[in-house]
Length: 397
Ligand SMILES: Cc1cc2nc3c(=O)[nH]c(=O)nc-3n(C[C@H](O)[C@H](O)[C@H](O)COP(=O)(O)OP(=O)(O)OC[C@H]3O[C@@H](n4cnc5c(N)ncnc54)[C@H](O)[C@@H]3O)c2cc1C
Image: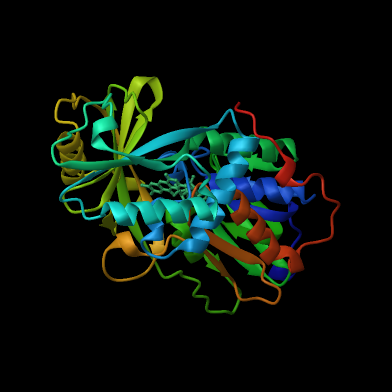
């Protein structure tokens, strides 16, 4: 029997590789649209970037500096949706931005930025507090302080959010194979054949469409795709940029702080679970194996120094550290100014049967998942929709 016609063990409409927030989101959207869905995760749900973010559900005030208005507007819309539909997982968080005499971002720029943020959907609640009216509950350094700006954004537990979206996808019929690593993929005229291994067991899944949501491993997965008698080069032009976080003992009383580090980068100092404080992040080019990412000593020193400069009397007792990898469009120069839009790439087929999707924000997972389904729609069979994800509520598990 010719290789291409050998019988296949199983058939699904959508196979997804990677159960981070994007894989979970695509599984939910595809299952909600009535499709047969199988999701492969090699370690555990949210084991990658989706448990190592700054845990903010936000438009990204600083992206206004680089003119990423569309991203900010979309993310703010999704923030509103999450606050309404996942109130047990996403809560509002008040931010304070201290401006000193030597801060690069001047009060006029901050005021304009906050006005724009509000107009793009950030809502009310922002303003300027003069140093005279600043109560200083957390011991912020007030020497040379010119003003403190305040605004509202939101926070989540990224891993818990991912697990909840995944559970919702499963409740709609999506199958999760975990731990199951996708080892090889063969392109076929009518879709893809995915070989996964779980506990030494090899399994073949034939799918009409394939979604690569492997995050920092996106190119490793693409490298595993073969096509009979075809040279394939699907590699995406991306860079990996590491971001480290610290968890410090002790809780902030006022809310979150958005401060300027010694190199003028913006750093978050956030209230976190169990009475701790989360500090992040850095932007260090990364060229190694994504499995080995870890905070570097210089990143830890940089973040500790930033806290110390702003909260000189605060205890710096370090409880833990973690690092994750951003997937950014390949480029030169600092990562700070590079686009944070989600990257989509298809196999170029007519219709496309493979979509790789990476980068972007945790905040925009739902709208990203809808875009993936839209790209794959011409290759998907007609099914009756089970539910519209817009009306789904997410309850913590
Ligand atoms: C430092 C940092 C801070 C951030 N802060 C924020 C923030 O505050 N707010 C925000 O909105 N966004 C933030 N982001 C962005 C956000 O975290 C990411 O966009 C999002 O988590 C990416 O999710 P993902 O599903 O694409 O990838 P991942 O979560 O990395 O998931 C990929 C999954 O694929 C699996 N996998 C890989 N290869 C295979 C294989 N062969 N077979 C099976 N499974 C495989 C991995 O195990 C992993 O679980 C931040 C990112 C970083 C790095």
